[in-house]
Image (cartoon, rainbow, N blue to C red; front, side):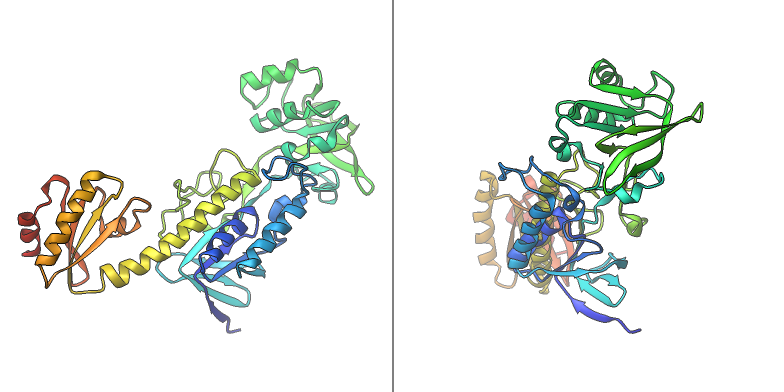
Length: 407
């Protein structure tokens, strides 16, 4: 089957909080933008009953309600949505391709916001109670809804124990299922000590989940003792699973840099090692994975995408688009650079056959990077669409520039 080809400025893979925020920024910048989401627009946040820690909503919001607002705002800026699965991607080069079952989407920028999924136990009945039916993966999101209730935490790593202790501020009892022998936990020693001293926390050693039970909603977790084989039904109102997180990055392996756990490595601008490919949200290697941090990532990625496209066009058509020219690369925030700018403009007026272009790196150094310039101020000489050489810092004067041009 021949696939339909569509062209966009930006294609965003993933329609969660990060992806939609990036879309809002790109759409507002008048970039033709597409968001591809394989499941539900809003991502994992839509499964959260109550979000009380997102700024601007003092009364709180449901995850679905908040994501619907994100969706509405993105569509306001003419961002397009496709509910389908991405089959493959081509990220190298100026023409990037995102392929689905029926379409090929060609674009200048790809933003990876594919999120991830909590690691599951694999126990019987688990699928039946995920998210809003008794199994949760976010204590920060769902703690208040479990005020004065009995909850269970599966896992004994740092996240499990820290989230469990947070739950004790609300729940009347927090039962922790620990895989190991008594006294052995996967968390740090400080968290372990605080946990074992907390009167609201009950530790069940040598246990794993055998089955999740209930009717419409979870009511019991059957735990199996790994030493005796005994199975005990433990009544709970909610079970929180903290045994790890699996990023949705299988498709990108070997293309971009990742951690051993599969999280995408970026810099603070959300840039990957491939020009024009950015990453945002829970799929990125970072300290905290929340809606608020996803929004921050998405804002940066969207802004960076707009800058990348604008700088690419400037570089191609204004910097490299003529036979001979000199480019003064400077930082407008630096007084000495501004003073040198005036001298460079005088030099440009004296050389009628040599065009002068000015590049300010104050807000972005993308064009400087394309020129191979890593320090400013600097003067680059371009001939036949190639950087012939540079004069930098204290060596910038008319004599040295003349020598550079005469090469």
